[in-house]
Length: 329
Image (cartoon, rainbow, N blue to C red; front, side, top):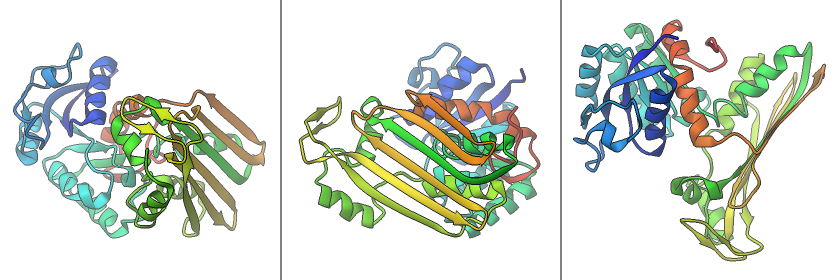
């Protein structure tokens, strides 16, 4: 197994999980790290992520300087866990790629950035090609359960007329940021008002549908989405929230993509005390029906996708890539 020297960008909960996965898997050797938080910058990576195999490199506060140092130490790839929106991270990618680093990122919109940020996506593609590197968005959702997994399952089908994929997440077991993001403890009307302003809700459901459709050779410009609160019938208590009956304990999002060749329907429910499950059903010849009892853990699986796609990203042709057009090994 080939090991790659890596720069780690962003050391929040997911970024730290990625460092842990890199050390445990042996696929990456962290040689530099950067985070803008004054509570983290200047400390040792081994102190912030106390996992066996994590080196005691200093966490830097300047991205350009960290990229320069990482390349001097042999790094070929940056593992980026910062923003969810392309507009938040475009400049970061341009800095990293200009330094000669391939980039694997957990930015949700980067799984298929042409859906919401086509201009920026084209600019990043040009920048990657000019630098001779690749840029790849990965994750468990988006990036695997509702897009890559269904696409791989369709590879046994002679024909496909419909794809149905469902992800249900017990958010009680997840980090505080996610429990807040799904509206835990809000009044239902407040939830709906925030949803109408796109201030709440999971980022990436549309990207999953568009990526899946594009990978199947279907058009992806006819998408309808909805989001509704999941209301608590009884009191729910987690480490971070106490939700009363009648308050919001999560969110339920639905999406339908219609194409001449068929339909794609995706459902994502993330709620406190909701039993986890992942399922894929394909109507085709032959049909396919898959289910993952207990679901796939989001944070650990996201970190797993990052380190497992490093080799694919580094070896891919320069440019902006997707998880369905790079090798899986």
